[in-house]
Image 1 (tube, one colour):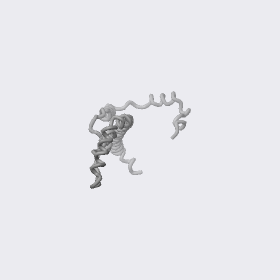
Image 2 (cartoon, one colour; image 1 turned 120 degrees about the vertical axis):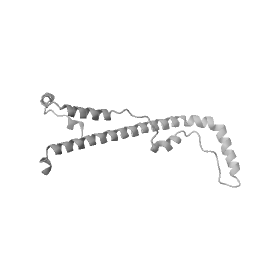
Image 3 (tube, rainbow, N blue to C red; image 1 turned 90 degrees about the vertical axis):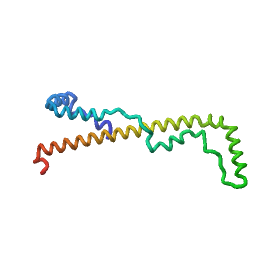
Image 4 (cartoon, one colour; image 1 turned 60 degrees about the horizontal axis):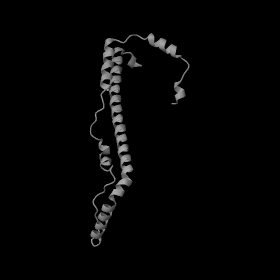
Length: 151
């Protein structure tokens, strides 16, 4: 759907406003039902645990520090481990500075993904509430008009 599909000249805004003024007033029960539904959907987002999907990524967000140096080579392994540790020890400040921006980027991406996941959860919860409400209204309509379901 495009924006121009939503813009129409017919009916005019005045005609729509006049039509809404002719609508009957909702009953008190309908207002209460709508108020309860809206109250349920206005639940404040809960700052909870990180989503399981992002726990491993969060643990690896800081790329400046690596696992301890190891080697599987039996003879030259200890020499390689010593060389790795010495290199890391000497150049760690430079490595940290080079990777600092990457760490900030990783943290920003994880925060953004967390917000997206929380928004998606909240949207799914709201959608489920509205679906239950629509199902209840449909059942009420079918109960009120038994001849309508026989078409």
